[in-house]
Figure (cartoon, one colour):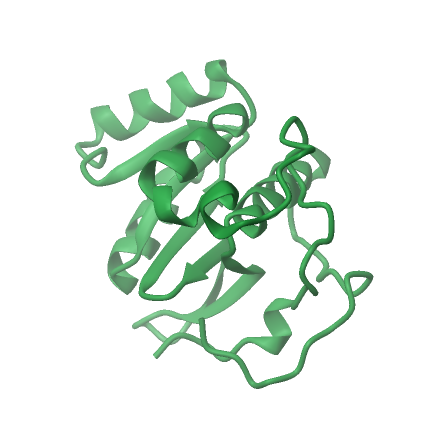
Length: 170
């Protein structure tokens, strides 16, 4: 993930545009990706081909692996988010708060022929999915303290950076 070299303390979390549930899922997902050593940015700004500015809810990067995560609490915006990620050439994981929303999002994408290449997960499935997709990034394979394995967050979280600290995608 590009960076301008400035880090902000954990208290400088960027203001998110979503409602409470949306923001909760974003923050919990960020902690999962942090546990696996990813750099994360919330509300990552992107410039679309048509000149508009948009945002990715959570961008997680580690080495050559980048995942755009969009949180959906309803299926209303999922098609636009899929189109946005595809236009940027990013791998997209759609995160939902529960199975009911996941089923609704999956149904909408299936009906519109947009399901291919999109991974849809509940927040509860995310940690396992990251571990299965990136097994060498697992905390146990990095020598991390996993004595609190029942917790999502690492014992000593890495410094947070806001989207304002990141350079836009090229």
